[in-house]
Image (cartoon, rainbow, N blue to C red; front, side):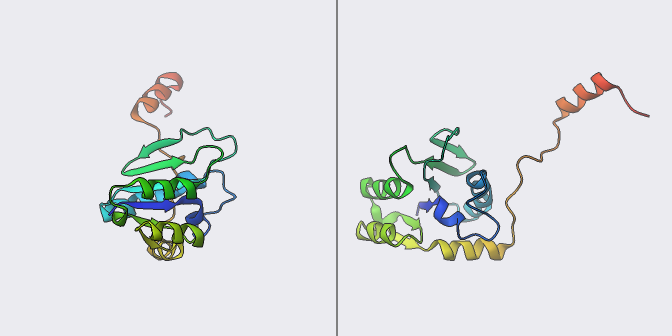
Length: 153
């Protein structure tokens, strides 16, 4: 069963993330990677368009597809359209606590899980989103630095 997640709706319900954080989308995606790996299900996170959005509208990170709604549209619109156009709408699980979106996709045949439920299980797992910016230098970088600055004794 593929999973469609209302991204910002879920971010707003997680204790370790904030909608005020400009990196909330990236952090949510990385936080969901272990969940996706454990479930083995196709996971798509759909976000509303961001101000000055520099990221591509669609990209993959591991087993997760990340989609940003086009300008003039919303994540809710994209999710409802995907379910409606699906050959088997009943195969979808939509994660949202947005009542209107939940009613729309339920009428189309999809199942709904509240963002609060998923947030509770992610919070209970106690995993903080990995900080992708604090990666150790690559071996090539180390070699370059050693060549430039020499070994320190």
